[in-house]
Amino acid sequence: MITYNYESDFQLENEEIFSTWIEHVVLSEDKILGEVNYIFCDDEYLYKINVEYLDHDTLTDIISFDYSEGNLVQGDIFISIERVVDNASDFDVPFVEELKRVMIHGILHYCGYKDKSDSDEKLMRSKEDEKIKMFHVKH
Image 1 (cartoon, helix red, strand yellow):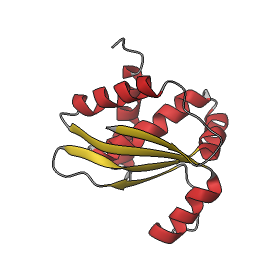
Image 2 (image 1 turned 120 degrees about the vertical axis):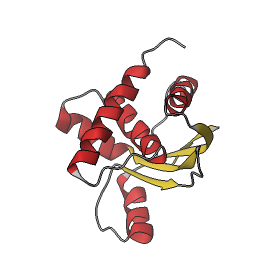
Image 3 (image 1 turned 60 degrees about the vertical axis):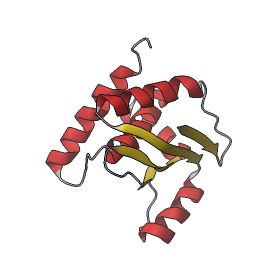
Image 4 (image 1 turned 90 degrees about the horizontal axis):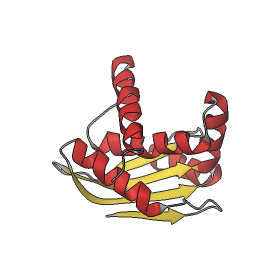
């Protein structure tokens, strides 16, 4: 089950389409979807979480708390819409494409992918691209 929570003015359009896509991504990794909560917020909200829970004094686009067990994918994914807007501009991509990348990034972490080393990050980017392409598949 996927839920969407809003701690800013942002509102995700077509929640059902995003949920279906995420469900398909989880299944494509031979995992089972548990409870995933997306919390869309602003920089200040996410910064406070970053400092309080991770002891990181920086802005970030996403923080995910992974509660997955075995093949069951579940957790809380906090996304700063301000960071996504800035990243989309920096990378010269449409906002919705960058939003999809960040949304699926958290799910991929829950599926076991890492991004700390160069090789892990390269695989993560490849998986993000692969899964974003699934968004366009008719369900």
